[in-house]
Length: 75
Length: 176
Image 1: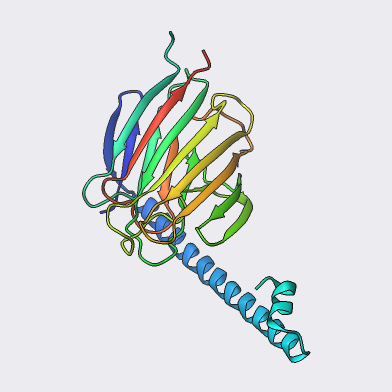
Image 2 (image 1 turned 90 degrees about the vertical axis):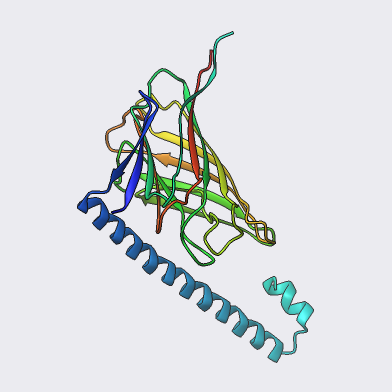
């Protein structure tokens, strides 16, 4: 059973308390939400990187040098 | 000379880790609060989420933050509003990182007994003894519908447990 630490500042005593069923359910929901958000963040990052590379390739196809492309897009 | 910097309570995570650390019954006799947090996690992987900080068991969407992050090779920033927590101790070392390395934070919470919105500031470095070491500054705000003094502070991982030997210490700061 997962536990949490509760530190009572009025006594200085730390107590290890088992999570309730509701707390466990909330924790599982939070973890699932995080996994979904993290997957979306990674997908967004990959899409952004792919778009940047495509833009650089198009600029080079127009005749720009690597230095000129880097000056424009910061890469 | 009056004591202006007092250790109120401290805890160290034991074997098996823990899902959260909560300071309760915080005395209302100080001007500000200061928390030193040293966290390692039982997560795996390169990015493992943050530690969630909430006040008074309030997990409503009444928190916001602004963050400045550097990792040794790049800098970035982010912000969020209508959050259900303030992100702290981001990028803490995981089971994939060098053993016995931790993410260390200093969290300052001024005017915690007041009845206005509560601001927070975090100064954090996650040392993993590798070429990438995260350093960040985070400004947070707790702005609940009904303002209240802070009587409890909870730290919960976004994913898996806080590891053994992680510590949290709460200090009270007085202005006189």
